[in-house]
Structure formats: C-alpha cells, structure tokens
Image (cartoon, rainbow, N blue to C red; front, side, top):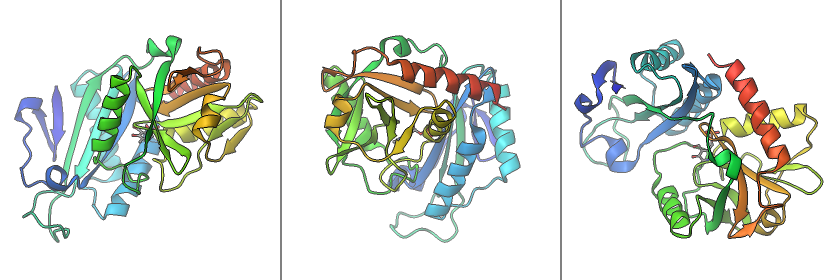
Length: 282
Ligand code: PLP
C-alpha cells in the first residue's frame, strides 16, 4: 500500500512516526473512517464535518484545508487503485516531550491509509449477527471520535469469547451503542427507535442518514434511549456504521430478536441506504 504521512506519499513500510507522538503516548488523536465504493467516497461531507468537530473539541488544528483534505482522499484512492473498502484518517496532536498538558507548538501528525474490503456484498447481511450486552466502561465523551479504543477492543474480544460478533454496550439501564457502530431497534408497531445524540454516543454519519431515510420511507422514528429488555423483545434490531452500512442483529445474549432472522424493515433500510449513498458518492 501507498500511505499518506504529513504531506508525503510513502510505501507503508517507510511511514514512520515518533515514539513521542501524543497519539502513541496519550491516545491524543482523532480518526475518521470513510467508505469507498466504485472508487468513490461515501458520505464524505458528513465525515469531513465530524472530523472538524472532533478537532475543535480537542483543539487540534488540521494541517490541510478542506479542499486539500478531499484531494488527499481522492489521491489515496487513485494511488492504491482502491475500488471498494475504506479510508482511515488519523490526526494526532503531534510529538512533544511527555507532559499531560498540551504542548504549545507541536505539529499535528496526519496519516491516511486504505483497506480493501467487500462492503457491498457482506455475507453477514443475509445471516445477521449475534450481539452480547456488556457494561459501557468507555470515557464519557464518546461524541469525540478519539483513538482511545481499548475498551471497545476488550468488548469485541469478550463478545467473540461468548460466541457473538459484537457487543452492545449498556449504561444506567439503557443501550448506548455497539462497540464500533450505532445500535437501533424496530418495535412491533414498526417504529425505528434510536438513542438521541448526546455525549454518550458517537454521532454516527450512517445513523443520521438512516433516520432521514426512514422518515422519507414513511417509517416512524423515535429518538429515545431503549433498554436491553426492550431490545430483546423488539421485532427487529440492527446496527449502523460507515463500512457495515445497516447490519441486521438477530440475537441478543443468545435470545433471538423477532423471528431470529434479518428483519424486513432492516433490509429495506439497508437497500435504500446503499442505493442512495452509492448514487451520491463523490
Ligand atoms: N459508534 C461508534 C462507537 C463507532 O466507532 C462508530 C464507527 O465506527 C459508529 C458509532 C458509527 O459511526 P459512522 O456511521 O459515522 O461510521
């Protein structure tokens, strides 16, 4: 792969970052993942806007202008002949002597790399996935997309150890989100229920689109927190993220959701989402 590091295009083995980089020492860095289909960027404007928001929250300045950032995304797709998969972007505050206080004059470290992946034909769409419920032990600013991902990694390991694919995290008796996706249910009445935006969850770009698409498709939508019990008793469940789009959840803690197969509204939302986003990719 050819990767991007602070203005340079390099073979991945030549891209080196200082051991004093605060991304490495403090997880003082933020990231974005943008899906690619047909060599084009999915939901780019949403990801770029969230990136700016995360950077503003942490006081990290982007070394590139918005136009330059888009051009770097396009260039990395070209240089890697990426047809389908994702672009990972990370900006850390940069390298400085180890000190908890932010350094005054560090230069941010900006890296991008690609990962080829079949995102359209995901075999898990047909089967759905199983999730387990785990306590949400992450920090309290999940709206900032930081690289502080150790607990989500631990949750994923625990889910795998219990024979499931993902974890849905629970805090104060309500589901927050999945370890790396937003969590949603559909009630017996056919209403989409999804947790409202707050600091408790990442403001998913896919989530926002699904709420909009559901409303346009005549599916009622309630933005409110739901309990694990409500999720287990729901007609359908699914999760959303940039590379999974809409992924059916067919079991929670070993209990089937609805019929235990991907739900019809879930599959409809996925189809509408994919059609619209692929058509509007840039
Ligand atoms: N929630 C968490 C914790 C995530 O890590 C992600 C993305 O990876 C999402 C939600 C989904 O966000 P998006 O749809 O913008 O990819």
